[in-house]
Image (cartoon, rainbow over all chains, first blue to last red; front, side, top):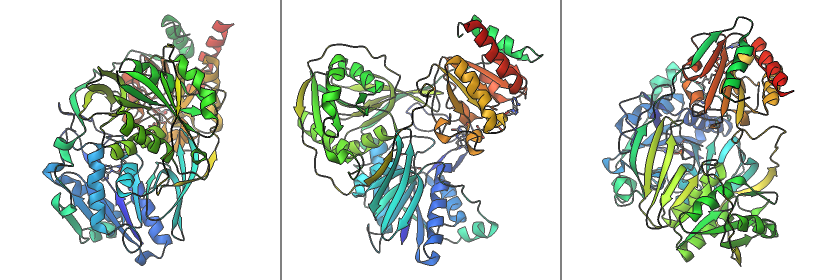
Length: 267
Length: 322
Ligand SMILES: Cc1cc2nc3c(=O)[nH]c(=O)nc-3n(C[C@H](O)[C@H](O)[C@H](O)COP(=O)(O)OP(=O)(O)OC[C@H]3O[C@@H](n4cnc5c(N)ncnc54)[C@H](O)[C@@H]3O)c2cc1C
Ligand SMILES: Nc1ncnc2c1ncn2[C@@H]1O[C@H](COP(=O)(O)O)[C@@H](O)[C@H]1O
């Protein structure tokens, strides 16, 4: 079985995140990390690998992003993924969600054809912490003509099919499909492992294939800013909220709080 | 004037409020045309409600495939894609939700349309659609526009004030395209709506964090919430510690709330929690650590023990209400 995991490098949510005027991320403003939800996707892939005979399963991470996304890729490899594909090309800058989905579909295609002997399962996070489209996995599935089983809190792969428990605000649904399929995981699916020292050392020797647009079989006219179906006109920060009054409880903290709420006409 | 397709969101024969918001927004852009996708008999129950909010047309796509054994979200995507092709609408409006975004993203790929996601305001005169988005938990405002015809627009619930207006609501039955290779719905658990107001829509939210200490002690948070008619929320640490269910998590990876009043009890105010509540009109915090970051954005903060302050506040509320 071949599993592809889509991983994205994002600005660390612990640092301040900024946008440039054209709406692109200001990548110098914050530290970049492997998105936490993608650690969970990698963890799920590794658990599936362990449950399905280990050496017969290959886990390949696929990432689209600037050069420094290699750090995020190394993190996934040090957790235990076997190989990586890094799609990086100037022409990808400014891609919208549709462009991103097309590009990722192209990159997945370089790992192997969809289906038995090729790629059986594509795992992803349900929502990236920067863009929050929460739809790229389903869109990749749409481009590849595969079923999308999204927001999984639980994934079972058995006898050529996959079943997930999909948990969202819209309800809980059990979905199933024949492989190959795309599955996105939610934040409650597992606790990702920490890379071991051995894992970190081994990761340095694992193969990372760097792909240009052309190598991924992509047409420059289909991705990037020029092909984007939507554009950002402006991006402006809002003034941060400032602190109001703070009192230390002297036995009447609740009463003082109530008085504040009354003064604000909130109770 | 061109048609503006509005995907109707409905549960058990009831139209969701977000649909009325979309129909209201659609009127400013063109002619509102509601699209009902559901099991047989769905449209009859919904049609009058849609007319009251200005639907000039109602496209009815009824199919057994919308239920158990059917292909997940495929009827919605298929019906909308066929209508986009046929009527070349000004835009397709869908409410932002997990399902809404998935339908929108797939539709955008299929029809080659731009997707403007999670908009809080929408503008357009039929030729060009432009939108406003609130990102990074409300810390940034982004203006975008579509570069294609018939853009797909997901609109954040609560960002448009729904206003009734009579519409002709002429019904037309449309076919549901044959399914492709999608995921099959094996079973569906009913959405449990509790006694309390919906977290996303409540005007008051009382949230508890790790400081609440246990699942049992969350009754302190619930009791205060009930005295205020509020929804209950939780931090991720409280959810991860098993104090409160996941669906009530507020923050970066949970719900984004923007109530009139947000009360944080025993929550430190990590940046990821703030991302889900910092646009609340008034923020009040109780924390025993005077340096807790939550106080940086609190309009009123009390440094002290939540287990004495919350019940005291609750008593004051009850006293004033009686
Ligand atoms: C990618 C990512 C996504 C995340 N998403 C979210 C998210 O969606 N939502 C979220 O909330 N977090 C999220 N987090 C986690 C976040 O970083 C914090 O860990 C979390 O918000 C902390 O929750 P807390 O404030 O309840 O716990 P703590 O930080 O442990 O704070 C508990 C607070 O309670 C106070 N306290 C203790 N006892 C009492 C008492 N008796 N009375 C009064 N005060 C008391 C303490 O002083 C302390 O300030 C995310 C993190 C990452 C990396
Ligand atoms: N540039 C990218 N490279 C690799 N994977 C991505 C990229 N963008 C999105 N994804 C995948 O899609 C998931 C959901 O992202 P999104 O739909 O953008 O919220 C992420 O967690 C990743 O698994």
